Image (tube, rainbow, N blue to C red; front, side):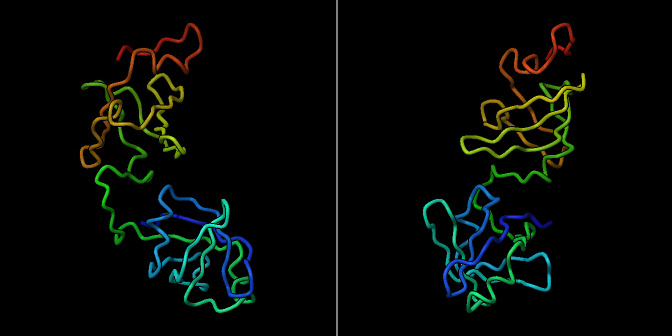
Amino acid sequence: MQVQVARIGKPHGIRGEVTVQVLTDAPEDRFVPGTELLVEPARLGPLTVESARWNKDILLLAFEQVADRNQAELLRGAQLFIDTENAQDDDDDAWYEHELVGLEARVGQQVVGTITGLNTMPAQDLLIIEAIAGQEVLVPFVTEIVPEVNVAGGYVLLTPPDGLFELNTDAGTEVPEA
């Protein structure tokens, strides 16, 4: 499966560098020189990272296939992807959103909802869960609250603190006891 890691912005300078909107939480791992990125539209790629550097808060990338500003301008708006099937990930506790969406959220053996998304935040990620009662619940994706992710088994195990599922409910709405 392909996961988008960036979107190319405007050219920077005359040597073919481009600005990118970073869409990954690990740019230092995704944009290593020599990394091949898939491109959408496909006619523009694949592209091989030649260099990556930060200019204040903006990531600048240079590609082996892009020699000057004119070629860089043609990339504006293109989306950059990695292929997760071939990506090497040293973090055994790293999960992509597409792996989590649709999994049951369980407290013990009781199903309390279904994962509908992953909100990647600077401090910590949040699982987006549609609870049995239909409300959306945001659960910090940390080991203390989500000790087990079992993709093959189709579930994540939660140990939520008291009141976590009640925070997003209207007064008078009943939520199953967890």
